[in-house]
Image 1 (cartoon, rainbow, N blue to C red):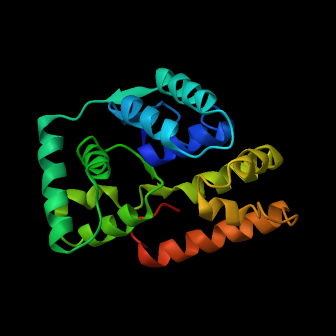
Image 2 (image 1 turned 90 degrees about the horizontal axis):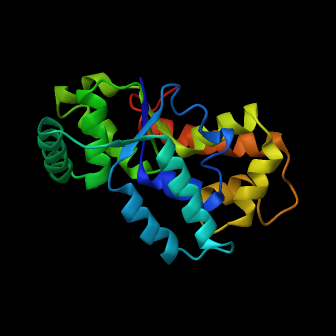
Length: 213
């Protein structure tokens, strides 16, 4: 069964030119699903981003990756659940945008194995929503943050290539730039893993049932 990725992961992966790198190997053994609107939304965001490299190359990376995976069209049932989740989030209140609510609904309704998201606010929101509705009973432990994905890639692949890609675009994600010491010469794998673990641990304290292990 395929895993889902949100627009934030797709955007940052494209800007780093890492979407087609083994960094995505843990996303899903049977393909990766993304919201069908991603192609149009993210192309605009890439062109607006203040990249140090070539935006056209980042967009080409995105287009290539999306062509290899599955565009998700939400069903009426999933749209109804997504709207309900957004309404609940507003009442709590926590931050859950439309894209994350749709992916969360797809994750729950189709009982998919994982959602990889770069939106930490959404992860914290999901933790609160677990107490608000039984509709999300199946999503506990199925949400992976960007730092977890990168950590796995660093441990299993060429860490130096990942470091180089992230530090070439230090403005794409401040947390990753800090973890990879992009403004310093201290770039050992051990240091990077410890820094990523610190971010993951902090998020796990806020969303212990939601975050994957």
